[in-house]
Amino acid sequence: AQALAGPQRLAGRHAIVTAGPTHEAIDPVRYLANRSSGKQGYAVAGALAALGCRVTLVSGPVALPTPAGCDRVDVVSARDMAAAVESALPADIAVMVAAVADWRVEAAGAKLKKKGAPPALTLVENPDILAGIAAPGPRRPRLVVGFAAETETTREHAQAKRVRKNADWIVANDVSGDVFGGDANLVHLVTGSGVEDWPPLPKAEVARRLAARIADAL
Ligand code: CTP
Ligand code: CA
Image 1: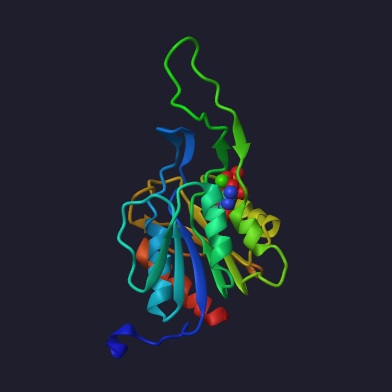
Image 2: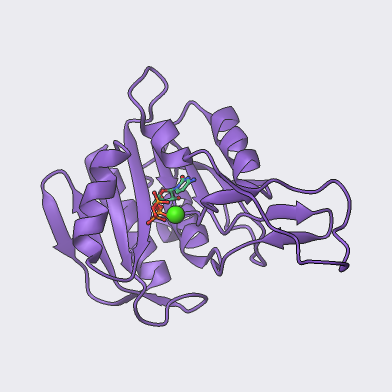
């Protein structure tokens, strides 16, 4: 089994990986969400675990099996996810792949009823989990990686996000094609030394390459 598992290059390390969408309640029966399948985040968690890393996978609502070797913490909203990430510290590595809802709703306590005018939803900005974990301080993981889905000027937007959120790397995901729920991904790795264009790859292969790069960097 050891030979099949390959070199345990991340043995003794702890990684926190976020994955999937978040759901933000509108009322007790309705929510706002996005089209994230969780596949890329789950693949990253599995690829890190395959290198011997201890992985805490903080997952929004998805329909995927837990990758081998990962401790999974299920959450629903962005605020739940932020709290779960905080509780999982300390860590050597953080990879924030989740498609966190940018806004939550000032939720109603009871189900909204279809009478009179349609309800107006008031949106409130959610905490930025990546920026929070990447902020300088004693609990900052040594390597913090964000993902950014962009539809245009992918590299430029991702470089700006890397700096704004104090992340070490951003995996910029070009979503102008049909990637949501699919198995292939076109990404660019944005680091402090520039931008690497990766060829179109299956999500599992993006994850393996990223895990190998993380092991190189530590
Ligand atoms: N992210 C996060 N918490 C949020 C929003 C985003 O941790 N509230 C993380 C994502 O998991 C991802 C990275 O930040 O790793 C970039 O997410 P993205 O949505 O591209 O960035 P935003 O700052 O929300 O910018 P945009 O206006 O393009 O959505
Ligand atoms: Ca966003």
